[in-house]
Image (cartoon, rainbow, N blue to C red; front, side, top):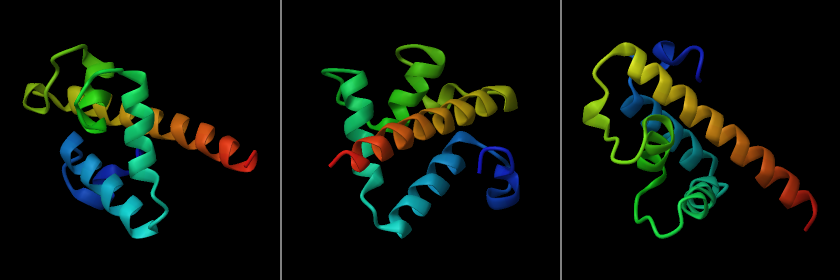
Length: 100
């Protein structure tokens, strides 16, 4: 998804990448999004934000919002970090699942 996002969603924006990831994960029905939210929340104790906002905060700093993404480079950085975080989560989630 990360390297060919435009092929799936047209203009490759963070919102569209988030929507694609959400749709894909929901279609799989494995509960990965709920677990990813818990994982991201654990990285940001006390934050009420959803993982898409937390990923933006990790990319651009606290208070970063999607409306603040003004250039294609901003969107590319945000998408890249969201994908990196999801890959990191999946790697940890998979290794944890094997130990149960």
